[in-house]
Structures are given as C-alpha cells and as structure tokens.
Image (cartoon, rainbow, N blue to C red):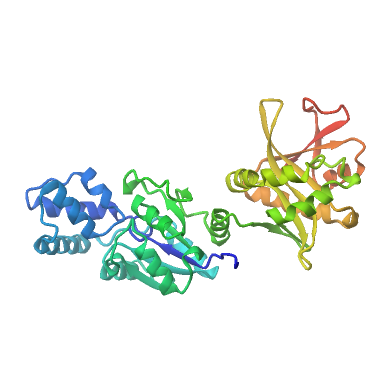
Length: 398
C-alpha cells in the first residue's frame, strides 16, 4: 500500500485568511435591522463556516423569514458593498501572508475552499494581494451540501489532482473542522476569538497564530495525524527519525548487546513488551510530547545503527527534567556517530526551546563521560533516588 504524503493544503477564507466574521455579522445585523429585526449573535453563530443558504434557513427557523427571500439577499449584498466601499475589505489575519509565502516556497499546492460566493473570494484575495499563492479558489455555492458536509473539500482535492488523505485543511469554525474530518483530511484548527466560541475539537491540532508555522511544522502535524514517522533532524552522515514498529527488532538487537549495559538508556525491554507498548509510546511521546527515543540511521544506506533521543522524566518525585539517552551498535562505535547524533539532537532541542538537557552516566563508563564533556555537559551535584552511588548526573545548558 502506498504511503500517504502531504501534497495539498486547503484554507478556509473567512476567519482563517481574513478576519471577516465581525464584518459579516455586522452586514447581516444591519440588513435585518432595516426589516425591524434584531439579529441575535447566538442565532447567527451556527452559520459561521457555512453558506448563506444555511444562514437563511436559520433566519427562517428563528424569525420566520422566507429562506428564499431574494429581496433580502439583494439588500444584504447592497449593504455589504456599501460597507466595503466605506471600510474596505476585512484585514488579513496577522502573519498569514508570510505563512503562505513559506508554504508556497516549500512546494505545496495551496487552495481556498470557502463558503463565501465565488466572486467575493476572488475580490478579497485579489484586493489583499494573496491570490498569487493559490492554484484554485473554490466556493461552497458550487457544491450540493455546505459545511459541515465534506463536499467542498472533496471537490477541491479533486481539482488539485490529489487524494483527500494527502491534503491538510486550515479552519476556524466547528462546521469547517467537521467537514475536513468527514473528508478524511488532517485539520489544523485556527483559534480566532472573533469567530465566536467555536468547537474545534474535530481538528487534529489547534493553533493561535501563524508566525512560527512553516512547511516542516505542517509536515510534522500531517505525519503525526497519520501515525507516520517524522524526520527529527539530519546531520552530515545521519538521519534521526521517529521509529516504526518494523524498526523494533533491530533496535532491540542493538540494545541487547553486552557492551550496551552501561548506556544511559538502560537495559533493553523484552521485544514483545516494546511491541505491545509501541502504539501508546508513539501517541504519547512523539505526537503529544514531541520527544522520545528515535532511530539513528546512515543517510547513504538507510541502515539502523542506533537509538538516541530525549524524554521527559520525573526525578525524585518533584523535578521534571529532559533526559538524553543513546545507544550505538557496537560495530559503529569509535567513528564519531554518537557525537554526531547527540549533537544534532541537542541543536534540535535548543530550536524547540529547551533550557537544560540532563543525562546520567556511570563513573566507569569512560566513553560516555568523554562524550558528555565533548558535547558541553557538566557534572552537577544531584543524585537520583534509587541510583547506584557510582551514577553521576550531568547537565547541558542550551
């Protein structure tokens, strides 16, 4: 079976690219006010992320307005145009243009899938100078069923020429997140306080800003949502990536080597225990903590030569630390691989905001003590309860 790969990223427009929900509510509030009706925001809120047709049904249910009232729609469009001429189009969400530039440069196909009318999507993206980033603009009015049905996302994927499972969606509404999930697409929820208290629980992950998001981050979110291994970092000779179930026998073989008994990571667990616990380990360590022990392999051959990584640990029932561990296949020792792997991991940990990294080393483990010194670790006056008296604690300052 061919493995999924992130190819297309689909953006909702209102509340995701532009901060338009307050503007739209204001338009409808003024439109109904001229009919002598006060539009309650709680009545309006369920339509966020869906189409005008969906709103018209809500207005019929709550205020007795004919859902096919063409005069009301014409009046709304007139008021909307007046407000655009007076106030301009809604502003871009902060940092969204930089995000689009980064994703475009990373080679992803980008598209808009919005419940707004086609002409409005075109006008807004042109006016706000972001049209150039998108291959296609798709309106919810072009499909039979509005969000939360998956129709618009499935149509957009088809137009992009990619499978739904190879797409990611960015949404700010409950309707949009549910639609993405129904389409079997990974959904990143964008929390926009101006979109009301939206239930984004259908999204795989929720973010509050775009300033730190780039292609590698989107790739990681996508791969984690599909339980696919993520490349943590690469060095001159090595690739360090999350492990898969298929890696475990080789890793257990390396961990069971007699000369690995003094390694920081400790003695290997039985293979069946590793296999039984792998799903929960992957979910908790990789997908939730964004840490864990990872596979170390040669870039040019793909051969697994060890295991290394960082894990959160709870020391002496009160101190939470991040601990580094590694094991290198004895056939590959003495060639600088341990230093190269650990150096790459420390640099990655620093990028992720780590402050201190700790490790535990037995006093007679000369290779590990020498490596720790070379990496910049220093011994500290701390003893872990339950450790032998010859176990030292070393600390690295990022």
